[in-house]
Amino acid sequence: MISQPQDDKFRPRGSVDTSSALLPYRGPWSPRLAAHLLRRAGFGGSPAETDAAANAGMNAAVDGLLDPRPDSLPAAPQGDLTYDPMAPPQQRRDAYLRAASWWLDRMLQTPNPLIERMTYFWHNHFTSGVQGGITPAMMVVQNRLFRANALGNYADLTHQVARDPAMLLYLNGNQNRKQHPNENFARELMELFSMGVGNYTEQDVRESARAFTGWIVPRDGASSSFVARFHDAGSKTFLGHTGAFAGDDIIDIIMGQPATAQFMARKFLRNFVYDDPEQELVDATAGRFRDAKYDVAALLDTLLRSNVFYSDRAYRSIVKSPVDLVVGSLRTIGVTTSTPRIIGAMNAMDQVLMRPPNVAGWPGGSQWLNQGTILARLNFLNQLVSFRAPVSEQMQAMPAAAGPVAWIAGVSQTDAAAVAARVLDLTVQDDATDEQRQSIVGFLTTDGVGNPVELNGENIDEKVRGAMSLAMALPAYQLE
Image (cartoon, rainbow, N blue to C red; front, side, top):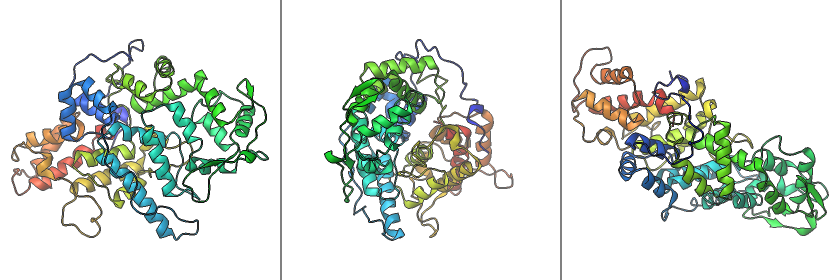
């Protein structure tokens, strides 16, 4: 059974010197830290990608992540993803699966993992999801907006999100009229998307809702439109400012609030460094973000090269989300295409892409782990590495992986210690205790009832699959 992450012997909680936390890291570089970088700034690297990052050095590896390459992947799923509210459930389900599979495949195949990582970050920040009149087609439009602005400017993205069709429907902006303002978007804009609770009043919510009146989503849902007669053009007072504000003016005022940089700095630190950043570190990060005028690439450039990012306190300190666990595992074993079964497995782990639980998104952290989700994680990982072709009908939807021979390439198939070392390096970068290592060696060298066996060409496939399953069940594997 998986223990709590803080019990992991290989992640001393320690402390950091916050005065030097954001200064460039000058310590030793290793494949272990290269894998750490690729887990945090992407979804984990394949063995070849990890080796390349290790050989390139930290600065070159970060440069490569921040400098996107041409992307020839499909810009949208094939087929029509729209439907009317009375469409049959199967039609709606098929459309959703095509959209979610398209995004998972992008995560698996992208040449720009940080772009895809930030697309996921914005999806869980500016949250909306498939429901009611929001179709998978609209979520794909929003997903492309996030990807296009993944490393862009947070303020610019906020302006665009305010008129995104899916967001307008999700937070009732489509119903926001001069005669009866709807406060949902205005409230969440301040509470969850920018400043956080305690930095505005109920009057500020009411006044900003008036400013956002006038936007509608036409029936086709492909875009949004501004209708002047629906807009309240009167004077408003918001956060101490008075004027005939529209929505863009409200966002500009919010971006000028110190609380906004603080709120976003904490969110970036929780996603890229650790869950409980010190207030001094939040202050310093907020200052960097504000000075960079909310340039996301500039902030990530600082974080991904910093002392704190490569500190013991940060290393394997964040519980993998199901997306991180699934995409990272698929990449590790050489899978490049998802299947609907993968989406079903993620559902059992409490995460369904494009369907977050509520406007606050997935809470993350240790809340990803409970008795039910841990069992779902272990079952998925075991089935993933146990899959063989040809397969039964029940297993047919699990994607085929490269296989044991590829996983332990270059290692003697009769040397149990070497095979165990290779498996642990591939899965947890050797973050294992001697006891855990000996447990895997013991599995490789005994049969089901404890009798000694020798590794050979006849049993290597079965033994390596079992060893991979054991390694992926280690606590370290659940952490990034």
